[in-house]
Image (cartoon, rainbow, N blue to C red):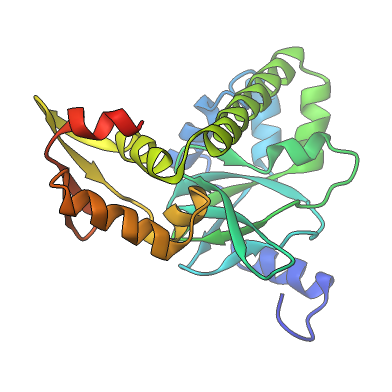
Length: 247
């Protein structure tokens, strides 16, 4: 929120910067297949979509801040959205990076207080669908199938968070980095592999709970050991066997 702007002004600007969803668009069809909406009857889905808008963000733009009133949740069609918190020390902690085809902020619909608990910022030019929370709640309460699909989504996110906490508490920094690299392998050839880093290094460092300089130092040590070669955001792993002992 810019200095001197009110929540009402921000809400009005959000509406002005959004467009109604075209029922004939690929995004409409993609949203219809998503498990949070596929359980709805067609008439109910069309009623919901009548209030759904599409929104675009430029890289670095903030979608919402922590503590803002939550009126919508989102389905990301293109781009990347970073969900983060700012600690009391001023340090930013990246909690999650949302990729296309995923929803975010949907759990807020069923919280007692409808406020965003994190800040959402575009890591790249992004396009998304904005789903009105109250309209969705009204439909889900009348549709047990849709409600069970949402419960499945919440459980999946909970499992992912438990795994992340386990990794952060049990593994050391080098092991966490190794696990991250193995999770982002795009091609293998016997004992060799290619890893593509889609996120900036400072974001990866935050995800791994290390300082950017620590991440650089760890990567450099792997290069010096002959395990890796780095070319911008592409990493060539010369030996998966030597990399995996740290996983």
